[in-house]
Structures are given as structure tokens and as C-alpha cells.
Image 1 (cartoon, rainbow, N blue to C red):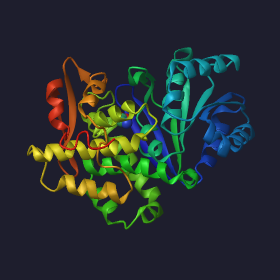
Image 2: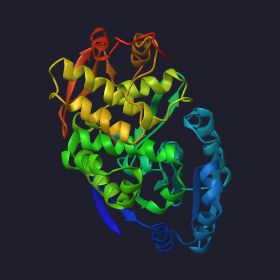
Image 3: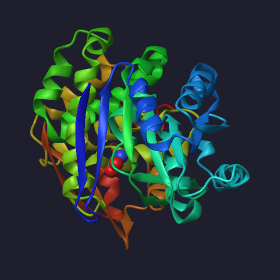
Image 4: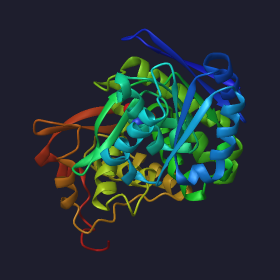
Length: 364
Ligand code: GLY
């Protein structure tokens, strides 16, 4: 087991990320030592519930707690006010109080939703992140971003609210569909692009996803260490942390354009990273050869590297509602070269120049 400590200066809060195989056993020990006799509320989706809900519930009851499990339909559409309101009602119906604990169990949607419920129910109760997808293990379970979506955009209502502890059990990845492993690989590749050329090279050197999976514990630790350093430097996303949004401005727009139905988050981010790097390289802002290396690695991991929207200008209207917009400008994350990134302010009318419109109307 590896432990990474996250230290948040603004609130002097510290919490651990524990990573390893079958680490859920450590969760039961943790709950038994600190929460025996209290209530635990598991918030998860129906897919994770089917696979692991009953055993997690049993483990928690055996740790000496009363337990309630709340399950919602899988997918981004559940990050809604309506589902959140159902969670509040369930928490209240179970008489959960500030001494009890919420367990965010699942992928990014479960983490964001349960985390935001924890941040706001009774003005804040503690929660634990128990992520089951690669994307949640390397990114969304760490750093305290919690949110729900509005019809006008993703993550528009939320808070920075850190978990009490994160348990990353890499055995959960064994039941993850191939598409969702690849989805998480987009974020792993992102860390290599923005912060760690040796990680990028390592991922390039694997012959295929299977070889990479054999080293997954170590890769998850590398990503969480990078994320820890970024979050410690800029908890509230005012500078350094924005680098984590590499590929996300276009990515969120693609997700939303297709109503969260066609592409996963990681697939959309992959397209966003490739698209912006192609243009920034053409503009002379990024070292030559970077866009090709990035497209090659995305291909290797079965990720898309072109935005297939027929008229990419349509994406700009979607982007205008992005919360990263401030006044009439947005901060874009670009690569200097593999392993280092920078933030560039772009006016809304300049955004078009970062989209490659040469193939527009060719396909959708
Ligand atoms: N997922 C991006 C962040 O945590 O800032």
C-alpha cells in the first residue's frame, strides 16, 4: 500500500490517499476505528451497485455501522439538481447527522455528486472517496472538486470540499469495461503532457494497453502525486491547477454538444488535447512534433484524436457558457512541449483560431 498525503494550506487540512490492491479492507478498518456505532451512507450508481454494492454494505455493517445505500442511474445526466435533491431526502430520512459519513463510491459522477451532497447537507458532513474507475482514481477523487451540472453547462454548481480520506483500490479496475479503462488513460496521458515527460515516454513505450495495465498501481501513484502537488500549489483553481484542464475546454464542449451520450469524458478530452495542440503547434506556440507524438499515443490507447463535429464553430457557442470564461475571455491550456504547459488568455473571437476547421462538414 502506498500513502500520499495531501496538505491544504488555506484550511490547514491534511488527508491521505491510500493506493493498493484490495485497499477496501483498510476502509473497513478505518470505519471500525473511527465510526463504529455511527451511520454510513453509500452513494453509488446502479452499475457499481450491481457489482459491489452488497459486499461494501456488508463490510460496513461488519465494521459496526448502520448503513444506507443510495443508487442512481449511471451517467453524467445524474449529476443533476433532481438526483441531488433525492440524495438530500434520503440522508434526512436516514437521520444522518454531522457525525456520520458519506461514501462516494464509483466513478467521477458518484464522486462529484456525493461530494457536493456532503459539502452542503447540514452545511457539510464528512465524506470518503472510494473511486472505482481509472478516471476517478487518477483525477476526480483527489483535490476536492465537487459539482453538479445545469442544463446550460457542466459543473456549474459546486464547491471545493475535500474528502476525509481517499481509498484507491486498483482491484476495482478488473471489472472496468475496456472503453472506460481507455477513458481514464486520456487523463493519465494528460498528466504526462502537462507535467511529466518521463510518464509520457513510459506510456509511449508500452506496446499496448495490457502491458500498461500490469503497471497500473505505479501509474495511479504517479498521477496522484502530480495531482497532489498541483492541488497543494493552487487549491482554488486560480493558476497552476488550471493546467489540469488541458484538453478540457474543447472536451467539455464536445461532451455537451452530444448531450453526454456519444463520447465519454476521456474521449472528449483526448480530442480536445489533440485539436488544440495541432493548432498551437501550427501557430508556433508548441514545439514541433508534439502534436504528432500526442496523436500517436492517443491512437495507441484507442482514443479519438479529431473532433468529428461538422461545423466546429458550433462548439464555440457551447464554450461561451464554460465556467472558465471570464468576461469575454477564456484561459486555454497549451503545451510548450511534452511535459510542460502554460496558460494563455484568449478572447472569445480568438477561440476559432484554435479549432482546426479545414475538415469541417466532412463528417459527423
Ligand atoms: N479535474 C481537474 C481538477 O481537479 O482541477
